Length: 337
Image (cartoon, rainbow, N blue to C red; front, side, top):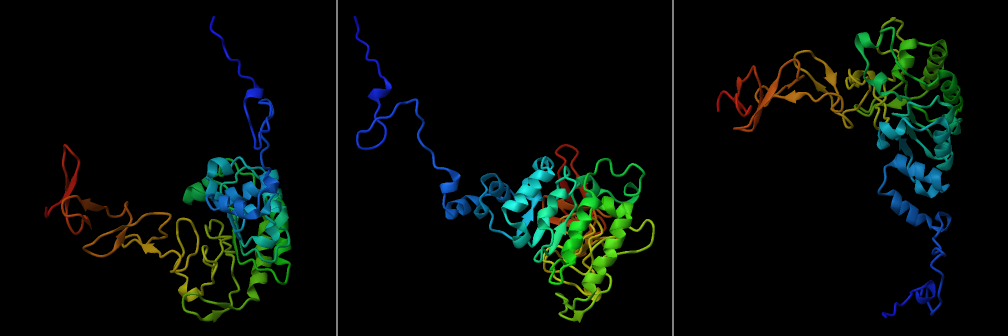
């Protein structure tokens, strides 16, 4: 008879110094509270800022987040749309947002009413807040903006958010200089928002600013557009301030206003491209204008196709050089090739 050797937990040595442990007892694991801040910060370097902030909330360790910018578009709209007001509030508290954040963008957070933003109430360092939560609201324009069924779903409430903004501009040492309101609010022109725009303009009007383009000093009485035209798409839009760097721009240098996303940019952050035919001005993130190497101008794809020749590797518009497509392989070649 073959003798079988039965291996029990007493046959397996674990640990050091000859000590043995039962296999039923799990090895002790280090707790997150025992990890040094340097380790958490090292891990955070591989994550988007918003993911670091969520890690700080989950572990109750503010060391996970060491930035002054929180942009929820970093994590994508699929995940951002699942965050609730409770989640947002917990994140802002865990990173000490009221004393840390200079930029807060809740892009994609379509499931919140705004009460979760209360932890930034009274902030004296917040410079920008982007409340554009809905992707549908962001892309709507023209007739879609003023249709009776727009928007289809929108939860962010003026009643919840405006008092928080009021608490920020009420501080004499407040730093807020850029607010991006949802397109839905700007369409409704709620009385509460209209009154806030007046207070915000008064808050900003006492500032003496320096233009980042020409370096001239200026005072602007109208920072938020309050055009009385009923169908004005610019009502409630921030002016005189670059969306990216938050530097100020005087009226003479204010050409960098994208007609698609309705945001202001300075030349250093996002150079504008103007279609030669329709004169539409767009930033590079909204619509890719095409450049003709022959005539040296930009065109919208709908205004004038700029085609790439796979033979000479040049992009030219149809006005400059006709192009032909092969009926079999569909490759495009210019008339010269």
